[in-house]
Image: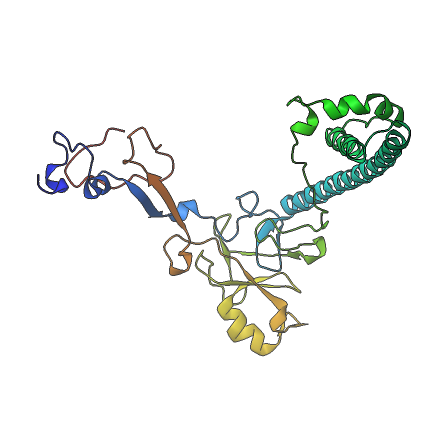
Length: 316
């Protein structure tokens, strides 16, 4: 029998070769997103719509003022809830530790009484103490109130003899361990700490006789595009091109009578065009088991999959 590639699809060799699977669309397909899939430079990073009363973070991310304020407020409320839950867990742990210490003390007294007055051996007393401690741990882990000293004395021997698998002590569960929240509000885009005072108001200069979302450089009067590098002047909030900032404003050292330095500007993050070199990461990937339309993969997104090299038509 010859090579598998020459006999694929015949009796005894029905599986497809790697070349045939690739030809039918098997594997990962990458596709560059078009400009319609990427936001504009004036879009809010939360609403994905043109920013209303825009503000800028120190990292250059643009937001609508109302949207970012609502987000920061929601984060503060969530931090308060997390802090309350963490404090409640710490208080519960403290209560359980105190109850366990009290039970262990009572168990030690009970074991001493059995050993010195009832004639029990040291091993039996140790087993009784261990069984009471194990059952107490199970009761505390099950969020139930632990048995009191009287109940332990009355049922200590029965607790030591119980071996049923459905007992809480026989089926331990991992408890959720909450971490203390830091209480810091963060930027939704970068994840870095962000406070209300860190936001900078942004003033975009509209293009005369232009559309609603067309803006220009207030110095050079050049219109902005998604490929333009933009700088936000923090003291005034005006948005200028990076070239204007570097060649005109920074050498002058002032703008509109306000002294400026290199630290007084923020580079605005661009939404991207989908065609420029700076958008290398703007790609979508999808894995097809055997091409689109095979029933194993859906057709969502922009992925159409590769065309068959054998002239086959895949029904979608």
